[in-house]
Length: 110
Length: 116
Image 1 (tube, each protein chain N blue to C red):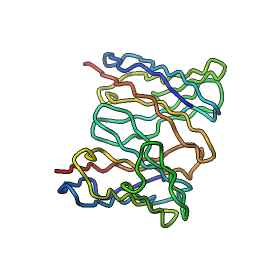
Image 2 (tube, rainbow over the protein chains, first blue to last red):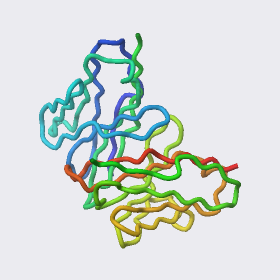
Image 3 (cartoon, rainbow over the protein chains, first blue to last red):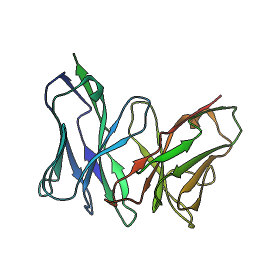
């Protein structure tokens, strides 16, 4: 089976940096994905890490350590619009059937 | 690229009626489509995985006779909630894979179903 653990809620102020951690257990590992979901909307893809290390895309970066079964999403220069739920996910199987974490609610304060 | 549409975005129906939700990949051919439901403040729950031209694979606990999935082409999958009841009220979201990286899911905007 597969399982992912991530914090339920994180709060931060505008302009700050926040890190959302994700640990996973999976029988077959292809990579770790991150998705953002605003209230009332559908998830949108943020990043995907198949190899160890840091991937940077603008203000968002994602890190993976396969030996530790651990990854994180780093959000810099936080903006109010970054308030959303963030899900980590691992795909498995021939159809890359995904398992999602429970999601982390990020609340950005002015 | 990677646009997935869903129709309708909102449905309100009476108990006992059937509701069909369409999911389309607009600018790519979807290798696989997935159907999820999501309750408020909860994570996405995978209902089924669908490949074009073959029967959908349902997750444990999901009634295949109640949630009918048809994947008619590489760009269209439909979910029909048959004889809907109030407990079926939820946010239904489809996603598709087919663009690199292969594991990336592109989500539709979701369909809110309210059964009265």
